[in-house]
Length: 190
Image (tube, rainbow, N blue to C red; front, side, top):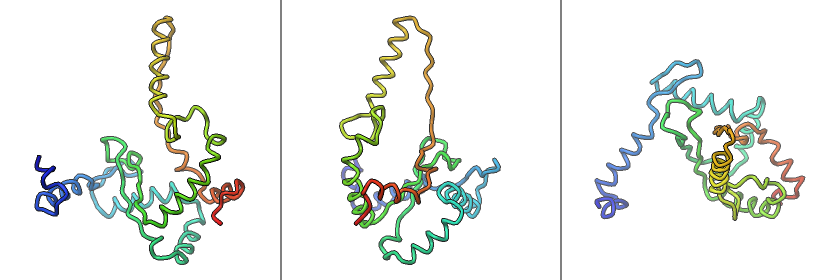
């Protein structure tokens, strides 16, 4: 009830809730690449930087990105990075997903690109993909799994249910190739 009355007001209660949430999100310890666990904030920051540099950069691309940043307007350079936990175990970077909160410039460009790609999606996205596609729902997968399970039980068939946690392909794709593909489909910004 207190949240309903004072939740968004800039009150003592609001700032206490905000501080508690900030403390909960803080990474106080982290398992390093070599398996050791550290609580040293400098080592934690160094490990996070190293992890994402390896994940998102190819050799030679880092300098090219730094050079491009000099040409960009000030609003396009700013963003807030937030690491969102995939599960309760926050001690490993592989269990955290980066989310970057960007300014309006990126939102406009993303909207333009999304509108241009929308007409091609039926040709590019497999019929088996149900998540993040209009008029399809991820619950279709759950229904198919349940129907398969019922069929196996009713027909006395042996079956194995397997859940895999795949790393997102986007995390391991050469991002420099996106522009080339967009131009091939005549989707590049004009």
